[in-house]
Image 1: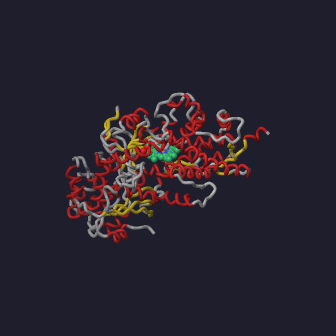
Image 2: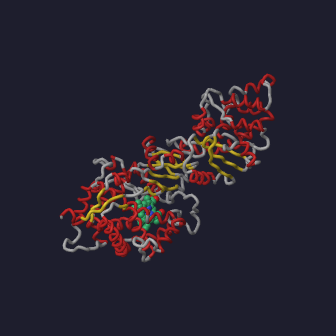
Image 3: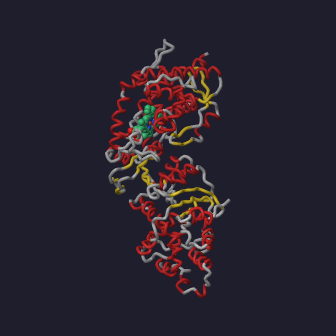
Length: 608
Ligand code: HEM
């Protein structure tokens, strides 16, 4: 049943409410959207309630209920400080843009119904700062409601009707309100009834000042980008596409190598110029040492993990963890990984013997989980053979609490291995070339040689193969960002203020023909890594001192698996089933395929 303003008022009592139209289509991911909206508005409006809904009038709407502690003086402020050119319509546009902000019990019932009627705009408005912001904010609304009527007229007509006024006894000034006029004059014309207009515009105005400051952030520093919509910024566009990194790539194409967009009220500066990135992420690391804060995670808590830790806490944690991934330590860990590879090979052999196609990604996940537990926690686990392993069960619990940290070591590497499997299956010639190269490192007279840390460190072609896969299929491009602690000057652009979040567009860098030519970057071609490239052309593990601490571990783990797997088996595609794997990737921090369906073939088979 459509939720009407009248019902809402009964529910919320003496509080300000805003009902904002978000578009015609019902929204997906409502829970997530609400969580984000809550988070994004917390700094300004802690005492609020948000609700997403759908009704006949507003279609998809966002309802915000906020305790009214701002009073009316914001509107007064607008009218006193607005430029002379500000028209009465401006005030009404504000009201309309925000849709509704009523203060019970001042509002007569008739007015409540009036506010349920979508008002219609409108001729072009006399532009000034406020109007343009209002237009920005109400973009969707204007598209939806565009009609012949002048919104100002509609509003005032209704106002007169609802208040039982007869137009010919209304004073001239009120009649003048039917035409654009000075805002102050409109308010004073409406006299006692101005409370209604004030009430309706008060909350809108509060928001508007805040939004105006926020949403003009990039305009003020001369950086282009997509226009934000009220409250959600550009989140809707990001979410509609499902793959937000692809939206970022599209925006780079449209606005250039440096642009800005908004996640709610938060401006994000996106850079894909490798030289500017080098300045920010490496040369000015002392200013850009922290990741942007993660929602619902407090970076000042003692329990905060490395990824989210800031400044000195991060430095201390990183200092402690760095030696864990030294060459000496990796070498010590390699036998533990090899033990997990042996278990994986056993499972894969069973699959081979069954002759059936299967999802290799599922096996790879168990494998990387095994190695994390054995190398990271020194535990002897067997998750690959025993699905009831107590550590596997425990790890599923750990996930909910330390999701990000665990994801760092487990899902990333298994997903990277899944993409390599996909590439091997779909590029048989490349696979053969890699197998022949790997063969040269093994002793041809021994069957069961286990590759050592030293041996895989020498496998350059395997290294290039993995790098090329990660270039084309980066696993977590969305997590690389930094927040500045001081103002920062970007050559040819200007100064970005302290607190700005800088993010990257990894796809644009990874597929840039200037950085990766002459062979087309859309072609899988590991040999391109034999040529020296810009140091920031390849960044699947991040950039600078805060890049992935587990990179060398992940690469070693991948090489130990691939060397043994490819020495014995070839990965064979299962037609459509395999090729489909990368059609619709899912993106929730990690970009992953649903499955990688393949078949294994023993390499000896061909010789028989
Ligand atoms: C293919 C596998 C992996 C990929 C693609 C990957 C990628 C990344 C990326 C992009 C970052 C952010 C870097 C930045 O902001 O500049 C990161 C950070 C991190 N990664 Fe990885 N990672 C992988 C494997 C691992 C493994 C195996 C571990 C641990 C065993 C690990 C632990 C971490 C940690 C702790 C951080 C936070 C570092 C910090 O903030 O100082 N990652 N990773």
